[in-house]
Length: 227
Length: 251
Image 1 (cartoon, rainbow over the protein chains, first blue to last red):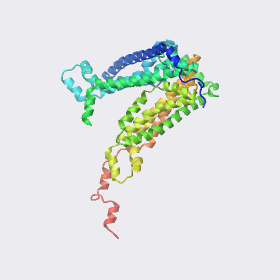
Image 2 (cartoon, helix red, strand yellow):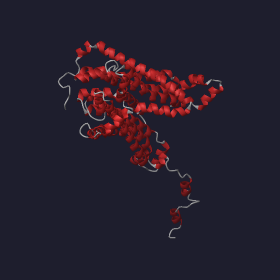
Image 3 (cartoon, one colour):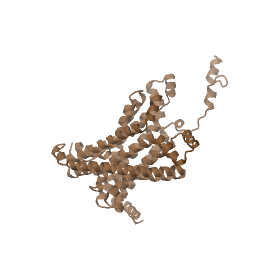
Image 4 (cartoon, one colour):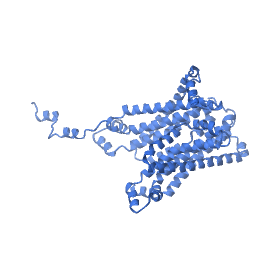
């Protein structure tokens, strides 16, 4: 077995000690980019979902366009944007956001579509306006499905941010460490960057599950009643 | 327009169809990675999904583990794999397997578990052994959903296998990465087009597989004749040949 980095220890602990500020900065950047991406992606998807639900004909084209964006390999999407927006954080964010749209858009539409007709009718009968109905009835009931979409979008983004490191040091988050390690055949930053990325994805996933449970106590109560 | 023309010119250049960096070789490499990852994932996820789907317990734990598996970022796994296995094929293979197992497992598990218990009871009542029950009843009913799990994973692998080029392996990601390093966006687009073509091809293959391996009664392609079987089974109004011979022995 040929190991490319043979002859060096798996981890050089002093390197980690010396570069704690660098690692911390990369982690913070990773979190900030994930947060910005998911936040903007969520707002855009919400707007698209409201349009698709009000005007049913628009669902198919919106779904198709976001689907195509989602199907392009992440690696290529980052690169194909560079002739237009350059090697910038903007390029990275556009690609990352376009990746979340399909997931979030579909989960919001599916969630609101899944609200029982009887509930919507009751709300209408009680005199709710369409906007108030959306905010007070449909969105809360759709929350479990929307949250599961948010989970997938967040975790996907955490995994894609490192690839943005291909564009340069300003946008890769922990990917900077991974690329640094790959370029110099140096295990320590590679291991730190990759391990922290995996840990971050799993942690955020578990945090969002906890948030989902806290936000929808009725879902658990319903489950307990049926079992 | 100019750009599209350049892409056509690229595809029309015989030099791009020969050698290690030619289209046939890169597609071949991409397929080798995709198919080996897919085969390993199926070997792991299908038996596990079927076994756990049939057993009444331990289900939720397995599904939760699979869901966490979905959270694991492919690129980070490839990077970690490089440390232990060096650059090249193997770290990419491991990442692709980790990517493909959760969807196949989850959908197989759900498909087997969701088979109507009444159907399973009826099959047992008819005296089917557990093996026959699995092969003749549960798997055929679960097959469409199992296939869709494999289809989803295949598409994900084909798109994500481009990352293998970042750690020194070939495949279609080579065009994307090399095109980027030389700022040759025609070459990058060529990579994207070929990846998209492979995904579409795999979707078509799975559509055909679904058609030919799933019973028409399950997909609803043939209309069910509702009344015919019950009439035939009614011995009073429509005596079957066998009961007719039985009632007149020596006839």
